[in-house]
Image (cartoon, rainbow, N blue to C red; front, top):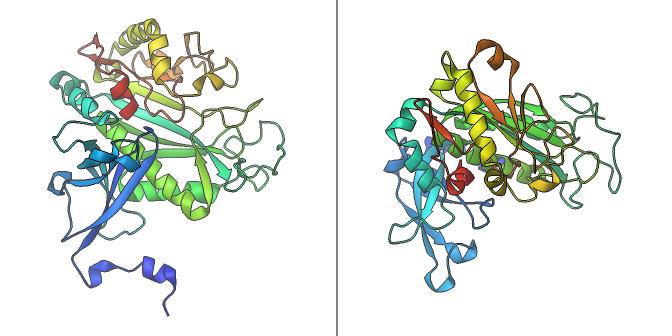
Length: 363
């Protein structure tokens, strides 16, 4: 009898042209990822060649039981690192049967913004640093920590190597390679300051693709931790006390910022961000007040400050950007559950408040 792994790894292309498409969407909490698979007659390369589908929204907190059907619209395709071959992962957003976006569909408005000709011309780039914590499944305590106890103080764990300092590298490396296989622009990974905490970076990605890629990268990570029997946590402060929290630092630039004279545009952008700090914080993730304490490489949640090379600031500008007079800046305020840290696009050198909370929560 074949081993289960032999059957999982069957190459369908040897016997059929049919493929499996895993439709992925975001559930009612705005953070939970759901998916289900369907068989298609052959390979697909364009999401708009895919059929729409439906699911029971009453089971995901997105529709009442008496009118529970929600429609999935395929929006982006990625290669499936689990089934491989011509099989695909499909990022979808969600609509009523009448074609209206449901309230938790944040991608709909984001797509309208990013398709605006002025925004397209500015080529907004995003580099998202997704931090997360791996937890032991049955005790919900960080991987590598003694159950009910604590490891030594922070210091030796960041970007570390060694069985007493680095916990979960097999999961991290599996995720790294699976994302690259899928076509996600993961630019790197590293161990974080708190033991059991890691980070992967997605980008640079342009516009709406940043959101599609970060969500599918999260889905792949959920699947890999499922296989490893480890729990993925996106809590911004999973362990109270003298331990770093987990954020989603977002690096951002437009063409104007990347061109000569861009540093002045960056400083103007930061000034405008400061005027809407409270509004941004309200959208940057639940529980973020436990992380943004003014300690552990954060600014205080009620204070907006920026600085060059200052990791304790709300907004950090790199030394290279300052020296070159152009480049990008980093918003360090978003929690790890919240994957984009900028609400303003700059078009033609002028500020344009294109992204509201609903859009920002998608990308």
